[in-house]
Picture (cartoon, rainbow, N blue to C red):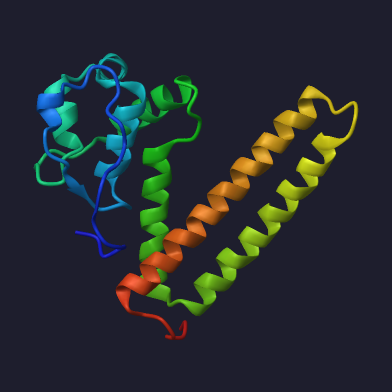
Length: 183
């Protein structure tokens, strides 16, 4: 089990194809976990689309999102599900992003908080500045479709940087390594 924050009840609404009897009780899932990311993807795209994109059975996919089950998501299925998530119009790649955040959170545990916070702060400032410039550019009369595409890309990069910072601070707080120095 990861020590990256407290467990919470997932609040994702169940998408089409999920049967209420399958999820009659709310399952506690660690917020920064593959199971929680998968649960969100299944809730967004629906179990039928997930089965179609992976070629897997519904019961198997449901078990993958259950942290108390032995089954684990394969890399190939994670990619297929993230692509289906994007094709649904939701954007992003929740499973891939969670894997990245888990790796970064592990780095934070290993390499201390001060340097990690500094690195992520620089990224948040850089991406935030670029997003602000793009927003102003899109507000001008005559802004092109490319300007709006660029603005959306910059805003998504800013959101990703902020998500990384949030995960890092949660990880450092939960791990009790606040105030240690990097090697």
